[in-house]
Image 1 (tube, one colour):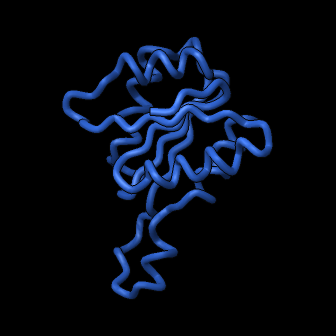
Image 2: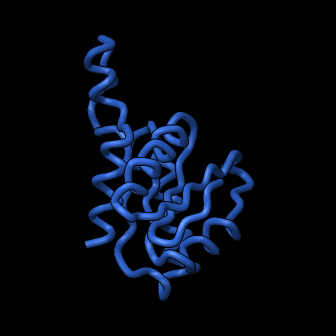
Image 3: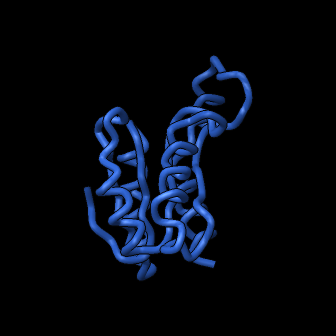
Length: 127
């Protein structure tokens, strides 16, 4: 976990590395990301997520799986239920598009979200 004051990013699996890379790049612009790797989804450390969102007022989730029915949706729902009054912007989800998973390495690189997708989502919640 990396603490931050501007935006909370909850990332899973390889998206943790992408979120940390995004945090490093955004720090050069004066944007301080808090990055949370929940490690386990069941049980989910809700207290850490909620505490960070209450501090930053903003949430971005990042995952490799598709947006619909993903863990990002569940985390956004938890935050909406437990920290709605603290939100300064709607949560943003970074996830793979709702298309079949490609077989080619080139197309797979386009399919899986990365640090640039996280940076775009962070900038949307800061608008």
